[in-house]
Image (cartoon, rainbow, N blue to C red; front, side):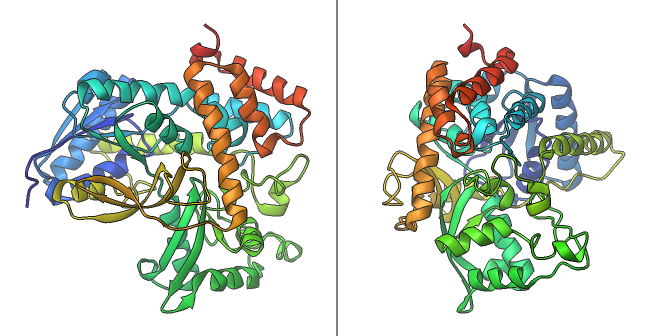
Length: 460
């Protein structure tokens, strides 16, 4: 079965080694999209050429009925597109590493630094002008196209393009699906049969209810984690955030898996996802200044360094596979980001519920209506329809509203190159509450100066 019309899907950041192998696998495996065109666009022409060869080889070997094109010109990729997928990296990893390193010198510990805190702010200041320019181009070149954003900071980026364009689009993060899968693995139950409802902000979403055959999955999951002794030193998961290694018996209680998320569940009555590394940055009383987060929670400061190193290995495999000398890379998020299923739902008007990042507009009544929230959304040929999930518990609602206040300021600071608004955003972020205001201002100035080449609006 083919679509009634072959579609054109433009990938802005099409040389992404994090996302493109997954996208290619999933779209090429989805037969109803036969006859469509994938357009890979990236400003890194060398990586783009390699990724294009990689996807073309995958297409040939799978026998897929699609076309693959590539270009370094964004306008060429966007012209006539039906769907646009954004996966660009704001400023690159080296600037991101510098941001988090500067913050650490001020005592601010960020296990990720991609959503909130100094790292999240700087990622937003770099990425928001790019997404705004993309959607403005879309208004001229493909005004009816739908946008799927996978770029972090997810909430700020999604808030920006919804505020500054008429393009209909959403942000997508597979984090909640990874967490539900983890529930299933730990409890030895099929994750696809877990019924759940969640809402909040990206990287600090709250599972308010989860059940399996009438069993309370959240309470059972909490009890299972609390009961683990971890005396063997076994690594139960190899994900970025949830791998816990106990080196000796005395560490067993302190280093039980997801101690931060478990504590927040006991405090607020909802389970935060996608894990300790992200959620700890929204409530920094766990990772505050001077605390040994490696010893207490097995969280480290070298996530970006590990990510850079991992990317080198992945790219070597992609290069080999592009030349036919190796196997295809299995993407970290393969079959979990669902871009092909969302396109299918729109093209065939077969509604599908997907957890997406959208403007709230009352879907969560006790969260500000203009906030960007992550919750279940019905996708069909008419677009994206947030599910009215009701109130969050009071504590999670307060955390979500504060996160939005910071993101709102971040968007306006980025669009206008406004240092004062950027300072307000940083000063309102809980991660800086242990600093004197003069220190916060000095931190901001140092980060802005370090990223001067990719922040022209702040220095013109």
